Image: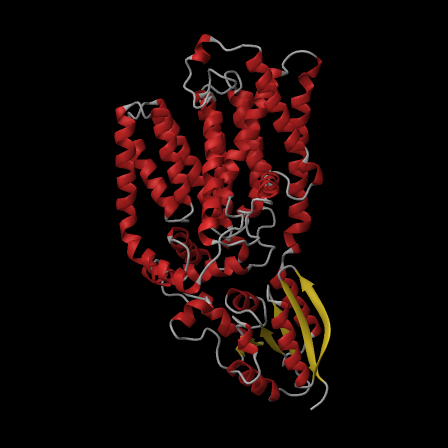
Length: 561
């Protein structure tokens, strides 16, 4: 990067400034949502998963309504700064490894629980990822210097960094107190080291050590990172396997990663038992009929999730790049240096790496879907580690287009497409920050409605407990009475059941002036109708219903004895 031109440094600075402004803009405004509440609880060494309590023969919810402050304390009770043993104990009945929560444990004890400060680590990792993307793309362009990217090092790296910086998808994750941006930062750095080792033919002991630490850190952050670790091994052996140092280094690196994971193995075994008993879902990507549409939707979401034109512009960019590449090969413009460049399946090393990256991550997710036989709608976060490869692919095909259309009247085509894509991405990010930014503010909107329309003696009844009940407690008045009714099966609300008896007893003792706020989140219609029917039988009448993303609530008022 010492060979970079001054104008490239200036453009990189502009990209980083825009990336920082987007990631820290109104960082405190959104209310904490369920997964962020889970981050707080796990980091502090507390469990708020009703299934984990049930498997121990305990009950997460109290037998009667309590003050909202009691529910909030379930997540925020401190077991001491740096008490990582308690965090590990909680994670035995969870699905996540510990690294991010251990980092957040120290962060929370230093800065507190305000949403703005809680999200700063994720925003910093997101900003760091933009710089790492530039560094990785520049390294790849240097590796591929004898092919399409020979004179476009700066352009390729700046395009990849700009895509990462301007993406509303990336900004969204950077404003979320979760581990996703840390994963991307680890992945980009690990890939940079792997390419560097290939270029050096494995002659760098400290790089092997750092690579092992990064791969272990990724697995300590999210288990899905194991697919990316496998990608790094395939990459090293595919491009450098003929060198003994790389073969030996890859083996030593893998053994060191396993050694670093050994302390976590007992907890991981407990997690497997929990998963077997409680069950869990993965992203539902595998469906032979819907797979192409789902993949394209995810591909576009990395760039322009809300912009209809964004479904067309990426396709045009790909077509221009593919067409330009075919034209270039048809013209027979390979030089002697290009002929000697290492290739895989006839592809340049960078393009082979990008396609391999996508194949391993997407194929691995499909494999998990087949193993788990699950088909849920939550797919956007599980393919997060594939997003850097998509940005690199788009930057690569644009560079191909620049070279193929470098002369004649058609040279404006790739430039116009690049400008259109970047402009649409910026517009989409601005739309997200100014409109969608607060559209998913379910807890704030719900609590604001309760405070405006309700009475101090009202009872807030949650049909889904755990993070949802605790999240609502974060914004309710501390003295507001809150009660969670976990409904895991339809039989829970069958006539004469223990839950119905307890609920009927509590509601029967409420004064006539007190209302009941029935709050649902992702709950089956049958549960809603059963609870509504129970309230009707007890003489309550429903008022108007408020629907916000993820939450719907209704105030019921007693009208007869």
